[in-house]
Length: 424
Image 1 (tube, rainbow, N blue to C red):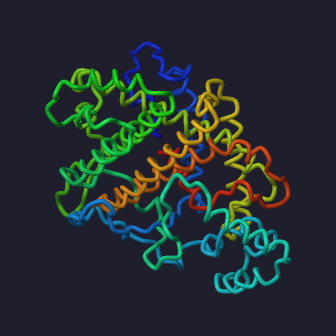
Image 2 (cartoon, rainbow, N blue to C red):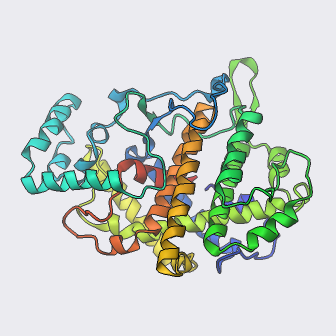
Image 3 (cartoon, rainbow, N blue to C red):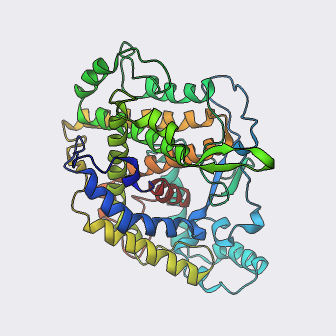
């Protein structure tokens, strides 16, 4: 999330966020000075800049209405030869001490050596890897995960494919968001969500929010997270807007008018303020997930492995610095009230929560612009991973210090999505 200070008017009083004891000014100062500069550095490092994604999966909900033909919608995949060999070689290398001694080898030597690592593992370790695989297959994922072994899955360098407005808009784009809100936000069909800011108002927002406030905390949180994600993505597109395509080159920059249409209090009849509050709420939820998952990464056994031992050590050190800053933040969201009711009722609600969110991750395969699809999938997976963390507190508390865990495991894709999603 880039500089929340710029996403609210500084003259506003310390306005308080709903559903938590936090105020915008404190989050702004914490983010802009303590967190964002470090997160930006972290996501520029090799471990976090390469994301494997399948952008060719068909839309499972309606006939594909054609992909965006605008040149800026295109995603340039990264040739495998450019991807650090440690990233290509698979998740288990983050636990291999032998792997970290090979930083001076040539790429081919590394590939051969890494290919041989598995044959030198003890039977106990092989068993652990098999357990992880079974655990990953059976796990309660909040996202529909791409099959990384599919021939259509490719590495993308996120730094070379930045999130920005490419010109993709109109009915196709709005069908995606309307489907997310109308079908997947615990909302009765008789209640209409406030329409997109560029459409004429039907004056229904008051009734909608009366309904929303009547929901239990969990379902209200779900809606607010999706709204926050929508706001976040819209702000990125306003900040990096396609301003000019003249003379054979595209020019991007802030589009203030577009931002006002979506978020200005007067132009949106008060709706914009709610959207911005939900953006901050999303920030706090993902911040809380990072706080909770810190013990997973603080273990010596976890390496953010790329094959370059110096780079890997520096990357992990930077991540641990971020965790230390997060631990010092005084106003974390308290998730203890989530799913705190009757045991069976809570279990059912949590499963509903998971299935609704999983459906949203599948809708991202319906986005017609490849670049928008890439960043939509990444940020959705980041939020899904944050939810997975928040619902795995006991498993994280019981992690063994010096051996892999059967109870809680993150794939490299989930780690990359979690930190890049929070960075956005």
